[in-house]
Length: 213
Image (cartoon, rainbow, N blue to C red):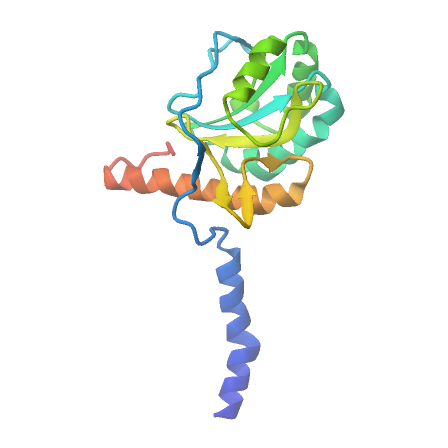
């Protein structure tokens, strides 16, 4: 009997614990709304000429700032940890809002990613400094953009244009820092899976389970 208990503790219990922590979904069943019904983009030009909208898309949103190339490593981190894992879903888009005049720099980022990534869901959108600041202000975030109108954080916006995150007093989180790969692999990936779970559950309920989210 004692031998069986020892074997259970040594072999079975660690496996159960690993499966629990490796599941990648925290105890929340929904991800709280930080800012409801954010405004859609204006009639802004995108790098590939497409009209980009937040409506009916799950959006990972970033703000490049005018010094976009100096932070290109952040986009590689996001690409490796989140984008490449989920870019096959039709209802998902990655959007980076950039100041006018940084089109060539943004194209360099896309060109650097394209040899090993399908970049169809990477969207760089360009607006004036005033429009970018106004758009950011209406997100009602605690943190501010830097002097170049950029941030290393990215934000999750759902199909109804609600900005989602964590509102727990011990762990308030409105965005995810692309400078730190561990934050993308842990907090952001966990929260992202919750968003996917919500929409998959809705699709199954409506008997419409497709490759859409």
